[in-house]
Length: 244
Image 1 (cartoon, helix red, strand yellow):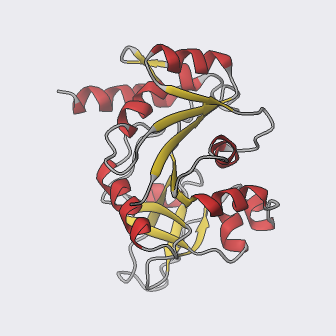
Image 2 (cartoon, rainbow, N blue to C red; image 1 turned 30 degrees about the vertical axis):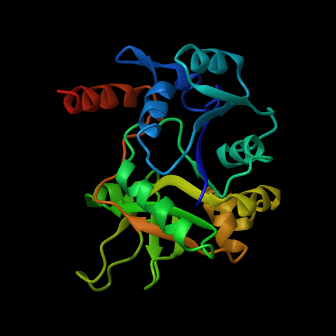
């Protein structure tokens, strides 16, 4: 039986929105919304928040969540997840985004099951069709192109593919959720940052540059993330509509 856990990396010092993990949305801190969504996953045995901030840790414990303290030296969320799970006896680690509480649960469960059935897949993620041309050209919307077997060829902030001939390919937007095989996650965290990763500021490119294949499953829709204070109202309205 495959053992899988979900980890939510959460930090205070967000460049564009400091303290966003604890911004209150509909009476709950943002990190609690993500935690509650993650608890709906059928394929993980536990959900844990990984943080280096005592304020976030106290809030998580306050709503009954499990928390693991990590060091302040973690460069990104994946490094934090790797540190938190270093000695855990698990097969797969789901790396969730601490600011995206509307991810598609069924699609993520499917990805965990696919990786559980195929030990050769070391890393997996999700993508969805791009809604419009503005989204396709938005550098904050990361795009991915796939090979014929459903593995990532490249991730980029640029609008790809370029449609010299239209109607053949539907552009795909990457959903920033990852499932790692535990052993690979620990190895990934030890790899030095790579040129394309640093150029595009996309950590998943580190895996591709080291020759690691990334399996990508498609989901009909993406999720709403909170990157700036302006995103709070959009997420609040979405959650209110979903709960009606």
